[in-house]
Image (cartoon, rainbow, N blue to C red; front, side, top):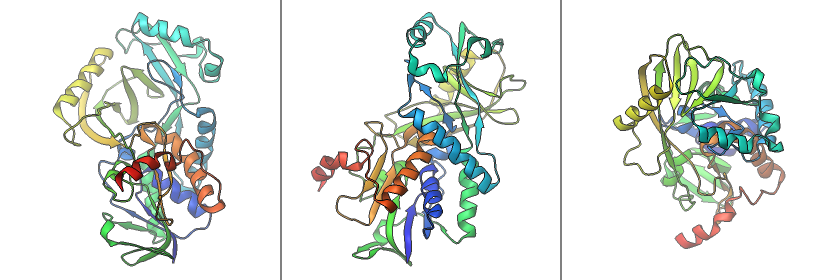
Length: 355
């Protein structure tokens, strides 16, 4: 009998698998290798200061050091580079943005992340309307696609990976655990991203998904590959002269596929801030598993004690996943209680309403 079946191998499922294997647990991951997984599309940003109001991200003082250590460990284990240390550079283009920053810049909680003026990006010739520059350290870019691919190979080498669409009708629950087709396990964990909205056991949770579209562009002679530039849109180097540009944040959408209007909008936003020619080489879309209260979904099903969820990492999964996957495994294996902020018990009223 397996210890765990894990459904989904995005960044959430990958990190939960990692910590369960570290705990010497016997697992199998069932994954459909979904082409629109938000983990595949995401830029993998580790960004300590976010939003137009320059707010320090939730628990970032704890999350970033843990993520850095976890990814270094995985780099050694898998033999690949996963986390690139890069500063996040904001190009301020209006007096309002400068004033907003001036109001925030003296706050002590931001000080550990602010790059000194003389050490920030100096050459802004590649950009239009560059009034001033601010820059944040302890940031970076996680190679999510490479990590998931390498970890999938590890799981396959251990006969611990099954590629298929999970069939909920084939899941049986009994007093000893669960059975899925030929697999028997003590517990099952769902790490399905926004696809959890179709999960009959956890679709009561108040997901608030947000579609994101990005364009991949070729920018010859772009001079800032080592920076994560935010100038209305993010411009992030991928490989050679190809850059990730995005992303949109759409609450109401009729299709999960890329749309012409969003491609045009992203290209327009890039062109309005960039002084260099570019060529669109690809256009992609995915749906983020965002949550109304912006906190992850961790915990046990209200009725089925062998059934769990690890989800709701939203747009910040690159640095939420390492800490909370380890935290979740400690909860599963050592009985560590869950913080009320992330425990799905905070949403029990939604379950009771849908019974």
